Length: 381
Ligand SMILES: [Zn+2]
Ligand SMILES: [Zn+2]
Image 1 (tube, rainbow, N blue to C red):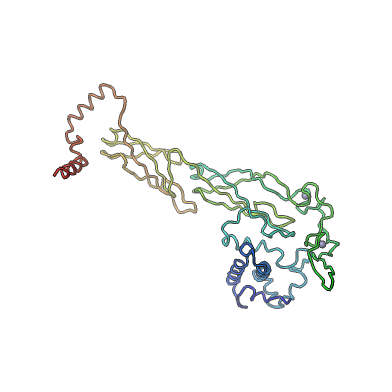
Image 2 (spheres, rainbow, N blue to C red):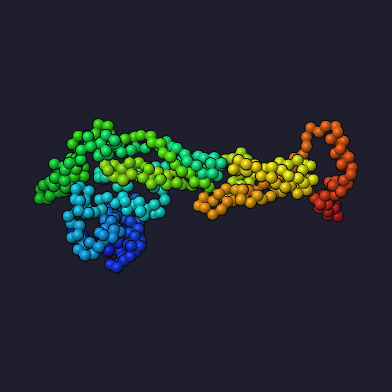
């Protein structure tokens, strides 16, 4: 079958810009992605075709070669190396990481993206849930985490072959990955049973990884948590995920942040809220109080005389830092006036005296009582 023109495959014109090529590819990749086309057998080959076209056209050098010579430019194996991994479209995982992050929301732990084929496969993305305190979210910090992951096998350097030997060409299919068999009048072609279609075999599988090329291991990893993270913040560590299969690229590690609830502060975006108890006398007479701040310090706050419970006051720039720069939130305190308990007889005496002196402060003179009284009177009439 003659190969289709790469520009046609991506649905763009010959003079398409890099951006248009990328857009065209996204559209086709989305349309033909195997995950979305479970019952369309054509989709996979269309998908591969689009990947192949994009691999060439996204690369300025390859694109120039293609523009000049057409498909002939790549007939002897892409990139001139020719050994095994040559043919275009075979390894499209790099194209994936370019554009697929924003195409598919949920791609965690989805296994290698090569889709189960036997060749080099990209390692899985890993998710790590990290709980931090509000203080840590405020200041940012470096945390060392233990990530259970599979890493490239050290014994065989990830090749899967004992002693790190390179895989050899499959003798059954001579590296074609397919075998032909005569069935009556027909010649049928099927995947080579010896190499499962990869065209290569490992003569002596590595004993330490069983020929897979990677082993399970806990890795410790120092992670920089920037100041201002919130629950739900995602930090991507490119290339820190699971090792690829048979020399494929490594997946990414995503750190999902969860900020623990704080004893004193409640957070809303970059603002902090805190209830502060004040004595009845401080609320009535006014005065200075000290309130805790998230940086571990204290701030003096002036309480105006006659402050009621529930009064809110703002402390500018004492909140959380914004994650991507751009200033600091505020801290809001809410006064909670405390009624004194366990009074001494002297205190009781003084309060009684105070009560006698403050006719105007009696419940009957409060604005609330007046409106209630008005309500009662209206019910009577
Ligand atoms: Zn074979
Ligand atoms: Zn090994």
